[in-house]
Length: 173
Image (tube, rainbow, N blue to C red; front, side, top):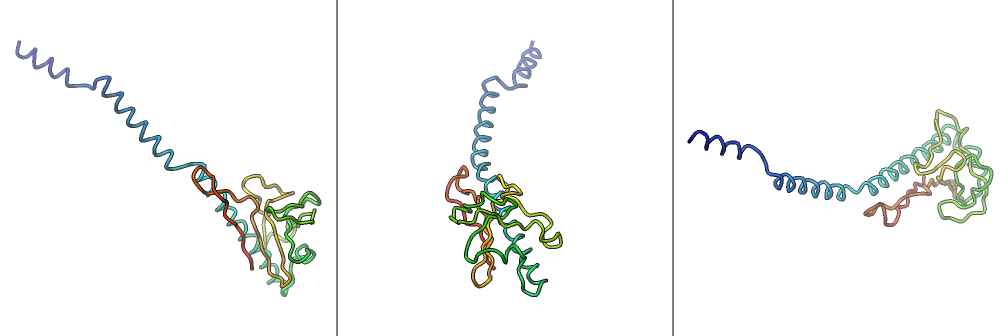
């Protein structure tokens, strides 16, 4: 009889009750939800695309400056043909490029860098959120002193949930 009672006690203590399992699952779900909110995937995606834009802007400007350095200080032909102090969108389109990065410009044609040479720029970068070879969503300006500015047109907000004001992604040399 005594052995039977000990065996029943051992059997009762061997597992979890349904209530205990439900409580543990609820705690895990709450923690997973909190971690998901803390990670904020929309914000991380925007930050990643903006990092790519920063890299692309630097790549484009480096290619133009390398070309200029290799050609006795002369800019690439399409850069030379640009009106000074005017933004142009980069791309192959001959029309529809009139508004660049929110900067109003009367220039309807894009500036084409696709033939600058693969030793300078293997492929013209495209904006990671909708850029095409016709309209890359990157802009270029040459000021009256010859300094070049490259700017990303579609920078995204990096606040909670991907909201907030977008940073200006621009480099001038």
